[in-house]
Structures are given as C-alpha cells and as structure tokens.
Length: 143
Image (tube, one colour):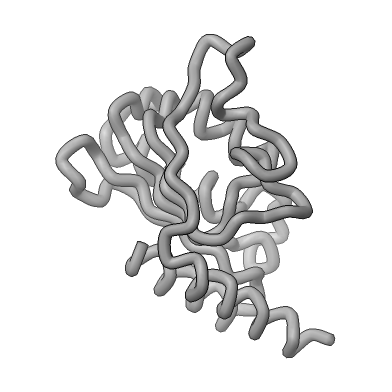
C-alpha cells in the first residue's frame, strides 16, 4: 500500500484524482503498478487499476493473473471491478471505501457476486486514513 499511496500522490501532482494501484504476484513481488492517468492521456479507461493490470499482464506475458493481488488506494468502480475479475485477480486490498461509486463492497459488490464464475477476496480499509487524506486535499484544492 505504501507504493500505491506514492503513485496516488504522483497522480495528484499531475492533476488527476489521487488513486494508485499495485499488482503483486503470489510471492508478494510487484509485477505491475499504475496511477490514474485519465487527465494525462485523455483516456476514460486509464484508471489506476486498469493501468496496473495492463502492466502486470505485460510483465508476466498473460492476461490471467490468478493468484495475484491488486492493492489500490480507493475502492474500485464498476469498470475496474469487472477488469480485475476478467484478469482473474484472486485478492483485492483497498484503502478507502468509495460510498459513491464503489463496486467491491460499498455501493455494489461485483467481485463477490455468487452469480459470477470468478470471485475475489476483499480486504478493505488498509491505510484508509492516508488514502482519504489525499483525496480530501485534492478535491479541496479544486473547490
């Protein structure tokens, strides 16, 4: 989560919402990382999670990231929750919950929906205060 928080701060410095993500393999080694790049790239899909998943898939040479963990500073949205399921991520560790758009336990719970053939374990609230502080500061500067 420490690296994800640093990536989130880097996103904020570039004018994007401060969200950072890291993918680790089963041994805990980082195989992909990303930060929000929507403003930088003008790409609506350039969320931190998607950027990290793409990097991890490229790193291992496969879209299938079963056994891997996605660590992210903010609860994933619907798009990102779907992406982590498509990548077969086994575990999600998140910082702050997103009551407005979260899709992994707060507003929706896509990643643990029993109707789907793939599910992910969710561990929430890890260093949540730090993640929330980055978000609050970012939006306070814009109001």
